[in-house]
Image (cartoon, rainbow, N blue to C red):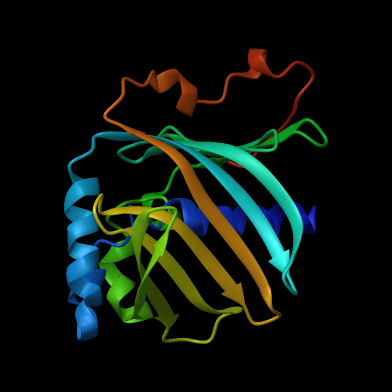
Length: 220
């Protein structure tokens, strides 16, 4: 259970990083970091929805501890993230987390203030107070020029930096990494991104009939 919770915390932080950078553009534009982020934001802000396939890895001491694939769907404040059979979703009325191992779901009342990571504007309202952006370098990988930016937390955290890789020509985030102080690295790599697709809102709501025998913990 502890491993699952840690994975979801890291995943949530990664997944919405590309949406939640809004507000960071005024922070530490030294060496062009702010300008680069502004370009990425301009592109993502134009999307009404995003459908993302990703690979999530946990590494420690240069060894891969786990490697999973998942999908993230976002439509304004609504979201649906799935990873290894577990689901974390919100339909703007309630927030629910389904755990495959145990076949149980926890349902919470929706509170915009309580979901800062998944909200594209609320979380970012104070983002600039939490991090300092640093442009690290450009590097070429698989024929693409990548711009690397580090976000350094201004307050004490379990991690000491979040590293972002941006495709220079596409102005898209390709990978993010959370570097923990215990030398664990949570890596989130986007393998496919489809913007502005048609999404049925039903996917964001919990449907009991889709989970036979599920144990429901309603915290509302």
